[in-house]
Length: 237
Image (cartoon, rainbow, N blue to C red; front, side):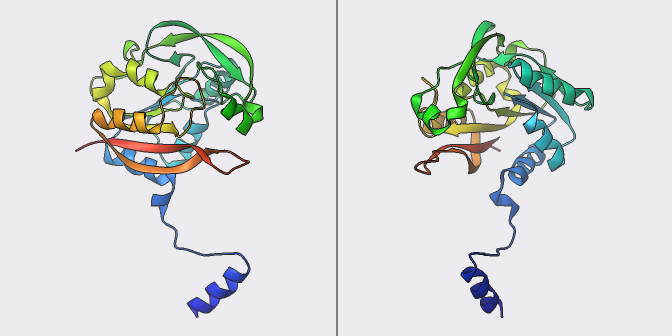
């Protein structure tokens, strides 16, 4: 009977499989947070608060510290923080030094970056083209007093090509990081960025293991080539 039902569904272009949460980023993220006894999530490149919303929807009710430099996105984040006592947000871009910088504002906001965008990126997503610049405060994560001495942090980095710089600036607190979530690019979308292989080896060298590599977060609509995807690492042992 099962084969008959599947045969009918297949002819209709439909398939039914047993749900396995391990194939999806949300359950794998929560597995990583629980298994590492995370006490705080560091949300670097918070945008309008979409990652915060996902965490709350997935059941995480602990502390979150979010960083977002683009003014209109930060305003949305602030509104969310007003009704979430466990959320703290800072209008700061994180990097490898303390000071000032200029962020390139993208038409779709979330593609804004401290780095120049490549033509490959703009061709795949025309709405991401830069439309202006914005002066922003730049800081190293380890120069900010956001972690408690006994914290076990889950570090999510979504900074459009500047992941290596954020890791450089986190060197002094990386021993308190037990999980890392990164958006990894397979091709150069921003000039000078580190690609998947380099970042994987770097994080692995810091004592983390890759536990999930999955969802394509950016594809070329013309070729269907995967350009970037999400990855989750946890501290070994």
